[in-house]
Image (cartoon, rainbow over all chains, first blue to last red; front, side, top):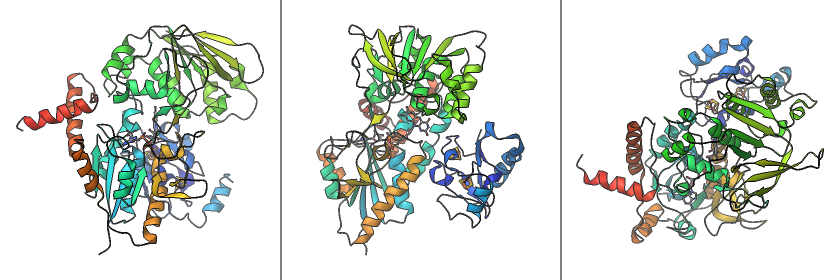
Length: 102
Length: 439
Ligand SMILES: Cc1cc2nc3c(=O)[nH]c(=O)nc-3n(C[C@H](O)[C@H](O)[C@H](O)COP(=O)(O)OP(=O)(O)OC[C@H]3O[C@@H](n4cnc5c(N)ncnc54)[C@H](O)[C@@H]3O)c2cc1C
Ligand code: SF4
Ligand code: SF4
């Protein structure tokens, strides 16, 4: 089991989530974050912090988002660890509103 | 050369470790003494998190990595306020960070709370997790009915422990005495009692789901209509509804009775708990209900117990603070004294919440230390000298790791992940025995 960052994160990257991850298993590229399934301990701390509900427990990932399970697993580990909150991407606020999380 | 900052951290739970990490990562030139009263580190990760959640406990690998930094001197078996005073720590360090957690179970304040058979979650959880302070606890499991008061994640843990097959608990790190007692438990009916509405329960969907998933568990609602109150259901309310709507298991081992809008009025019995009296807290009914039960566990929160000399807010049970700086009075802070974790925020959040919180407290320490030049202080070397003079023997991290191996080996013999050391006397005996046997 693990937790998975799904599509809503792309292009926003509000990194609130990384500040509470007890094992620092978030990795990121310029666009978004991924969770390393080998490290995540399923504590659920990150879920309520994400302003765009991008993170799901593996068992709750909606059908349309299931591709992200494999993408997180493949991409996370080689990318740098994200430990501290980063500046959100410039379009993050607009994207949040567009996604319906005003 | 700049003076090295001497920092003392009191308590080695998540908040203590994450504070040490945050200070080191922020680039502070410092030496950190990390003091822990128990023979083992990790705080409630070891003594709070339920035995059937082993994956969560693997977070201790992160704490081990932090402890490996040579700038941290870990001293287990040292209680601040008993073996060394807070004033002594303050005299020898530039900053003292209190990360002592909130170990005292809150009281309901109703009559009968001191009856035999009524206990707080702090005690009950300490019992099944082999906390040295709770070794003598013996919960009454000889009556078919138990009550659990409160609806946070701790209440969910306690219900799950009472309703699960003991086979699901064995193999991890629960206290062997608790496993034996639970194996002989006669508890078949567990009443879960909350003052408020289904949506107001503080538990997470995940914990509720886990409880509901126990094989052989039937779930009943004292007032099922409460679960289907009008309004857009939250994820949590949807979970309650799913529980209410599902069929009973083919074979009922135990039954969970859920009571919303119910407030305890009194625990009744002669010396020993016999019944719990409830009143309706929604205002809809005036009649009281009585549940005959032999055990009641109150899971309504925790209060801090900081070392003597530290202010504690009576209402909230935390140390008054501003972002982690301890406030001595309404206006001023007490220079050099900080607080973090449950003692700062109260018993909320999960393990990782303490990481973000520690970053905040560490930033206060950094800011205060960078303001002016500091004079040299002796730090943990002075404290260790005091301890030696008092014949207190600190358990350093290498010694803890030796105890850790011993616990795992002892676990192997009975098919468990580990059997925890019972307290400081046993810890010293194990370390002495290891020292006297040639490797
Ligand atoms: C029953 C229970 C179950 C939980 N389950 C989960 C869960 O499943 N998932 C999750 O994410 N979180 C869980 N938590 C929450 C988590 O354990 C806490 O968020 C976290 O442990 C708080 O960290 P802390 O460092 O502030 O306090 P603690 O973990 O309590 O650590 C405080 C440490 O300070 C030491 N100490 C106290 N006073 C002194 C003194 N005077 N001198 C020296 N040392 C001292 C104590 O011995 C202890 O080791 C649970 C909590 C409880 C109570
Ligand atoms: S908080 Fe949500 S949107 Fe922001 S980086 Fe984390 S997962 Fe992505
Ligand atoms: S569930 Fe916990 S461990 Fe996993 S990514 Fe989220 S915060 Fe980190």
